[in-house]
Length: 224
Image (cartoon, rainbow, N blue to C red; front, top):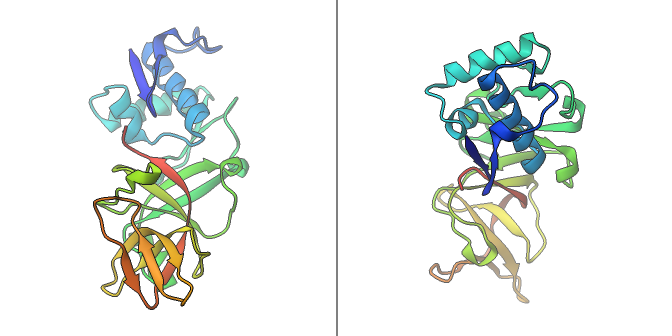
């Protein structure tokens, strides 16, 4: 079977793993995919993405095999998290990973922002991939296509949450109607603010003031 991770294809059945003689074909397939996904992307795949990539009929089937891998000491599972998988041998420890939350909605009220009901996913990402560990979250803004800088549909934004930004940075900003947009933040000589979409088909947004939610420091592509 050939699986694809971020556009790279590899033959999971041909992977040369030390555990090949210890696990059956389906366990091996899942185990190899987790290792390969982590080595390419720096983050651990979710149960749902494993199910989709390897053509399992249900996430329950994948979870059953993950439990078997855990019983054999090859992975550790953390309940309640869609990406709560850790490889025990070659995978990084949780101390080397950041637990980055994805919010359903963005609000200036931090209590509401970090409420459990507002957190829709958790992504474990290597600390080596990020320039900061503090107040980092993942946002997905529907319809955001900043094609001039390679930010296309299906991209999630890794955002360092802060209320200021330098002119020229790409930011998550809240507009007057409380919607959140991802744009390049440009401050003119007169102090006027322009939010540039980096999309030739969309107009700039001009404002006297803008509420900055955070600065975009990375991308997470969930669709190929």
